[in-house]
Image (cartoon, rainbow, N blue to C red; front, side, top):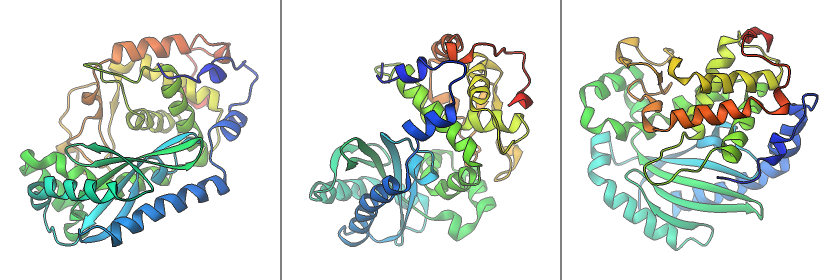
Length: 316
């Protein structure tokens, strides 16, 4: 289990979570500027020092969306390639692309290369002694820019064999979905990420514990259920989120602003990626009963004294 959760666990009912977020989780302007400088140097290296034709680099992940916490953040650097006109061409060339990136990044002194996955090269970079970025570098094709959303989703529907290779290409839709959220929702997301890191096991072997991304989506849905308030009590918001985990079997989370509902034929429970109608994010993880038990224990913390599950979401 991760360490460092004692601070949140020991908060009292009258403690202010806004202050906790500002003092412990949120990046200030100088901190973010320092991190941006480090990431920008890595981006320039990828654009100018690697023999891959990069048209554009998009910063995704928690850092790109503005939901990163102070001690560590994840970044997806999506490389839109100018000489790969289709997702299928990226898939066919993926091994060579990743091997090239891995080799050149190994010669770049600003990062520690961890290895590769099916879709990315993984590295760590540090901008402070206490802050580390986990970076996934993903080659992709800018299909949205070339064809538009409707055509892309139709193509994904017909091309199940390469559907996973579209995910990186949809990064801008994921960013736009989160970046318009009020600052208060961002604060709640950071609190949830802190809770996940401090209370949930990191996972090993066959146990696949939920990532920050799916928890972020559940937060957004509970905020929408509460009427999309600009201001609300973070403690009530966190309480509502934990109740959703306790009752995870009831989750039916999907958004239709990007795609047609005909694409989203999933059995509940489900949390569908707002950028990818074919991706039930819940399916990646297999310990939801255990997650529910951790959430149930958290609801017994002193912080939530006096709150009950019968309170309406509008009480936020």
